[in-house]
Length: 162
Ligand SMILES: [Fe+2]
Image 1 (spheres, rainbow, N blue to C red):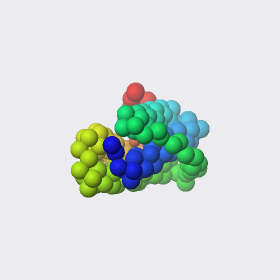
Image 2 (image 1 turned 30 degrees about the vertical axis):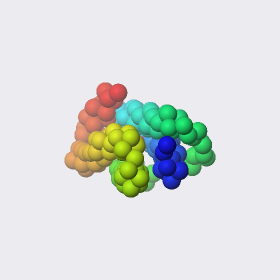
Image 3 (image 1 turned 120 degrees about the vertical axis):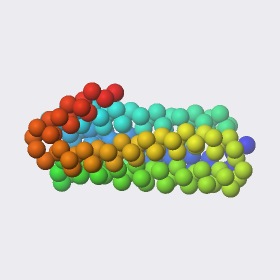
Image 4 (image 1 turned 60 degrees about the horizontal axis):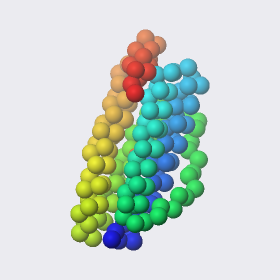
């Protein structure tokens, strides 16, 4: 049976993933209002993935015989200083999520809970990808985002992603 401390951490992680979905949807809405459909699409896709993460953890708890407790989700920031700010916010948020996932792995290791370690291993790999995507986007914005042609090119590229 899963340790109480670990199941509580996983339960909290559900909330963090749902908050991530909220944050990315808010960013998607921000870009939609700016007329940047590609950026808006990219963050809408991210929001969907975050929901999948939340329910994946929910399912794991159920399999472990724990009934998840769904808590209140905080309101995300919805206004940003400029077009670059949400990209930085997303990258910072992914780093926060990575450290949270790492804490769960560390706790599972401490409990000799090999099953939870394997389960969380998937999220560790996922976070490597999410952090890279978020960081790349800041880099690309800094390279191309200052001209209208560059911004158009980036927006078109992000519009194709599913
Ligand atoms: Fe996530």
